[in-house]
Length: 326
Image 1: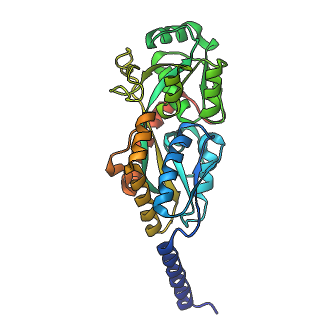
Image 2 (image 1 turned 90 degrees about the vertical axis):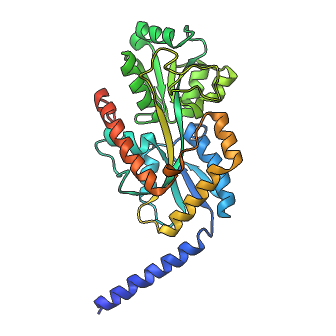
Image 3 (image 1 turned 180 degrees about the horizontal axis):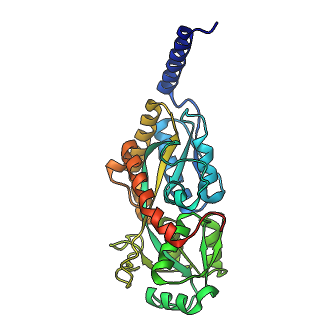
C-alpha cells in the first residue's frame, strides 16, 4: 500500500535528484528555440547570444528555428517542454505581449506557463521600403501610401509578429489601409522587399539595418527619440514629422514553468555574461540593438516587464480589430 509517508519520501527523493541534476547542469548541449525563420531579427540576435552563452556554459547552445503561427508554435512547444533547462525560448513582443490580444484561443499563458530568465535586447522599429518606391522621405512616403490606398502592399512576418503589430500602429497613425502580405518570418519578407515584389515594411532595426546600409532598400525613419548609431543619416520619426510613432521592441529568454531555480540562475548568469561581452556589444551596436538595463536582465525584472507590455499592446491591437485568422 502506497502510504502518505511513502509518497512524501518519493517526493523528497525526486527533489533531491532534481537538485543534483541542477548542480551539474548542463551536461549536454542546450537548445535555443527561435520562433521565426533564419535570417530574421530574432534569429540574428539569438545566434549572437548563443555563441557567447556556449562559452559560459561549457556546452554548445544549439539554435533551432521553429516556424509557425507568428511564433506561437515555438512558444507553445517550449511551454510544454521538460523543465530541465535543455530547451529555452527567445520570445519577443509578438509572442509574449501582442499574442494575448491577437489570439483569443492562445494555448499558453505568457506569464504563467514560462519561467522568465532575462531581457536580451531592445531595439527600435525602422520604416523601410523597396528601393525604387517613388518617395524620398517619410513625409512623401506617407503621402504615397495615402494616395495609393489598398494598391500598396505592406509586408510582415505573419499575423501577430513584431513587423505586423508595429505597422498596424504606423498605419493607424497615418490613416491608411494597405493590402497586407504575410510571410513566414522577416527573412522571406525582406527578400521580397529587396526584390521589389512588395512595397514597405516596419520592423526591428536589427533585421533591416544591414540592407539599409547596403542601399538595397530605402530607410525613412527610426521610431525612437535619438538616431541609431548604425544608421546615423536616417532621421528619427520626430525629425521626420511623425513624433507620435515611437516604438521599441524586445527579445527575451524564457524557460518552461517549474524549471529549478539553480538552472534559472545558471542560464541568467550565462545571459548576463553574454550581454556584457565586448563582441556582443560591438555586434549589437552595428545592428542598432540595445543591451537592456540590468534590472530587466533578471527573472523578476522580465516578469514585470512582460506584464507591462501586455497592458501596452492590448488596446492597440483591439483598436485595430485584428485577430489571428484574419
